[in-house]
Image (tube, rainbow, N blue to C red; front, side, top):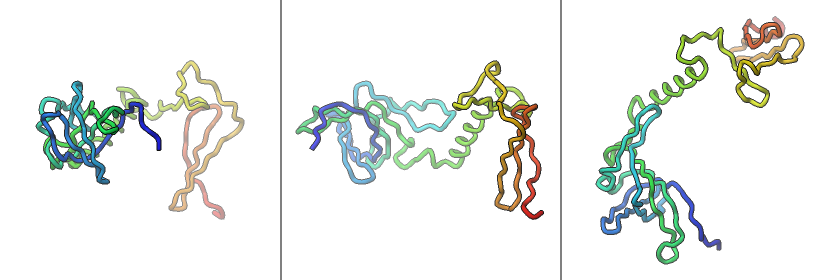
Length: 198
């Protein structure tokens, strides 16, 4: 049997079972029934779970009062091999509450996932087009063969003779051709792709 004689960090997700003020620790039970004693470190801080684009929701002040039974949370901390009876001691450094009350789950709000998709879309639009007007005629991937994004000064013509055609067959039986013209690099045009026999 391997003996754990080193420290390591880990994240535990589970439900609070109790809080002991004397030892400043609380019990945490995972969904598969494993129980841990979690000791609150002196530098521990807490927050509410936040969506993309949201500010930090500090919960460090009422952290101990929020450790009520059956509250679900995430505890990130460090396992130390010098616990009692040869067990590892877990000191939590960061706690994430999923709601302000034990029965609240912020990610169950109606607009949670809508807001997340909106933030992702805004990020990609800003990365490709900046803060200006969206102009697809100016869209360029500018990727090297390694996948790196090239600067304008680094772009070189691709030595590919003739026409490069990549067809995509749709489920409806119609297809579109993406045609690359050497004289107009990176310009994509589409035209109907006829099926065989037509």
